[in-house]
Length: 234
Image 1 (spheres, rainbow, N blue to C red):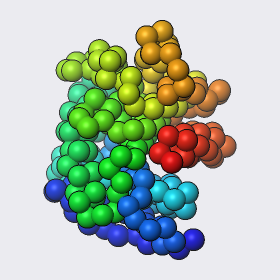
Image 2 (image 1 turned 30 degrees about the vertical axis):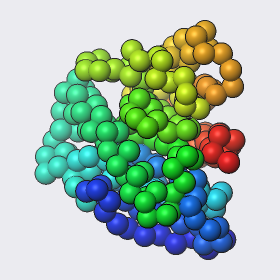
Image 3 (image 1 turned 90 degrees about the horizontal axis):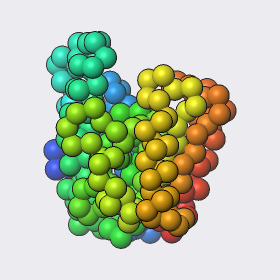
C-alpha cells in the first residue's frame, strides 16, 4: 500500500498526515500525540503503521511543541519535577481542547469520518488522551500509552469517571515506569470495571517494562493499539 505524507496546519495546529493511497476517504481517523519535548515527526513510523492498517493517521504538534515550540521549552522541561509536570499538564490540556476543531476541519475536508475518530498518545500524549476523552464530542476510541489520568493539580481527568463510559479506552502502562507510575491508570480501570462493566475498557501493564521501553515492549504496545483501534473504529 502506498502512503502519502502531508504537512499542513489546521485551525492553527500543525499536523503530519499519513494517508493510505488505496482506500477512498472519508476514513476512520486516528490522532497521534507525542511526548514532552519532541514533535509530530518523532512518530512518523507509527503513523505509517496506522495508515497501512487503513486509518487516516494524524500526527499532532502539541501546544508549545514542534512548529509552535515555546522559546523556553527546554528550560521548562529541565526544571524541577513538579514545575516541569505543571508545564506538561498545561500544554497537554491545551492540546486536548484543540481536538474537536482539528477533527471538524478534517471531516469538512472529506478526509475523516466524524463517527469513527480515535486518539492515541504516549507519555505527555497519554495525558492528552485522558483529557481529550472528556472534550465534546468525545472520540469513539482512545489509547493512552504511559500516561496518567490523575493530575496533581487542576481539573484532573480521573475525577470525571462518567466521561469515560462512552469511549473505548485502552490504557497501556509499564510495570517499572518511574516517570509515570502505572498505579493511577490501573486504579481508573478498576473503578471503570465496577461502574461501567463491559468490553469497551481495557488495561494492559507491560511486565518488566520501563518508561523508555525496548523494542519488544514497544512492538507489543503497538500491536495492542492497532488491534484496539481496528476493533472499535471499523
